[in-house]
Amino acid sequence: MVVLVVFSVWAYIALTGEPRLQVGIANGRYSNGCCGTMVLKNGLMTVANQRVGYVVEQDKEGPYVLPNAYVGASDYGFVMIFAAIGAGMDQKRLHPDVLNRTDVSATVPGHKVVVQHQKGEAGPRGNHYVIEISGPRIAGRWPFRSGELEILAREAHAPDPRG
View 1 (cartoon, rainbow, N blue to C red):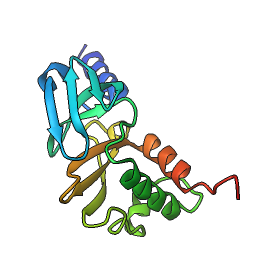
View 2: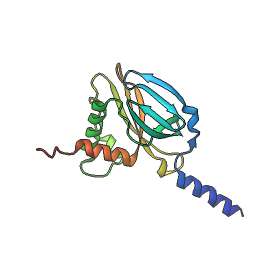
View 3: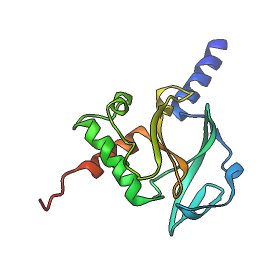
View 4: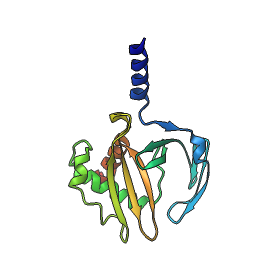
C-alpha cells in the first residue's frame, strides 16, 4: 500500500512539472514602462492587444507568472537577446552551457541583461530559463520553457532567406 502511494505521488510530480499555484493569486492590473498595462485574470493574460493563457508556478525566488506563449515586452530587445543565444547555440540544442559562452550584456543598450537556467523543484520537466532586464526603460523577469527559448533563439538567429 505504501509503495502505491509513493508511486502515485512520484508520478503526479513527474507528469505535472513545477508545482502550480492557484492562478487567481496573480489577478490584477499591472503597469510598467516597457509593457504598458497588463491584466491578469483567472489564467488569462491581456497585454498589448494579445491574450494568452498562463499558469502561476514557483521556484526558489518565489511565485511567477508563466505565459503559454511569448508575450512581447520590448520586441527589439528580446529579439537581440534571442539572436545572441541562437548564435551561442551554434546550430546545436539549447543547453545551460550555452549561457556560459554567450554575451547578452550589450543586447539592450543602457540596461543590465542576465539569462539564467533555473532547475525545477520537481525535476528536469520543470527546468526553465529566466531573462532578467533592468534599466531605465525596461525592467522585469521573464521565464521561458527550455524548448520555447530554443525555438525563439533559432528563429531570431536564422539567416534572412532574402539574402
